[in-house]
Image (cartoon, rainbow, N blue to C red; front, side, top):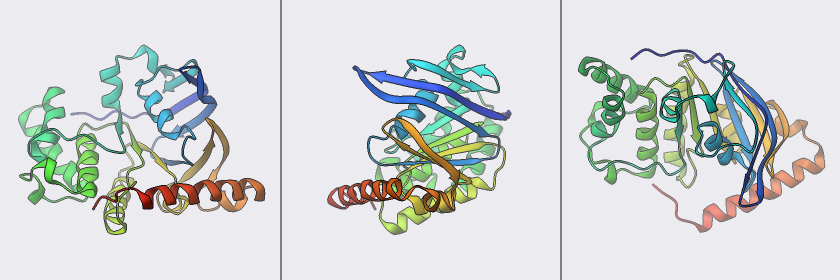
Length: 258
């Protein structure tokens, strides 16, 4: 399989309404080849819906999304989703082994057997997994292992952009760090851009080159991941910290996946 290069993902004045509610409101954002962008915000900010709109799981009410100047609305959805791969917060696994899960998309894309083997090996390494995982049943994996297999499955298709939606939500600290290490490994591959949705500012600092902060469907701040929070207006910072505390409380009351 041959990987192309998206040099720029451009989002311009993007809005989304569902059931009479405004979900995204005038989002404008550029992401460049080799960059890792974190999207930060509390519950209901519109972070996940932005990712879903990029890959056309929702069609925007207004605005444009362009890949190197080409509107995504002009692309076949299945082709778009191979070029721009979304790993959802709770990724579904096919029944069967880890190898079968990774192989499925490659076979669907028409890859030759020798290429399939190369891509499986490369994607395991990229997701910080070893060959011992290939024969394991996907349905018996831990939450952190499922996330890494989902990342490997997406990486195997040679995407030009990889979108990760809350990849460590509801994981215990050890599993969270395992997934973060896999993402750091991917950051070493400058052949694609990444967008990571998170509610965790410290995670954004560790993983992102740049971070945007969203609230109620709008981008309210954008800047360097290391200093964004400090650069916020004090009132805005206090509001975000309150939202973060509420989200952490919700996670603690929910199930934590090992």
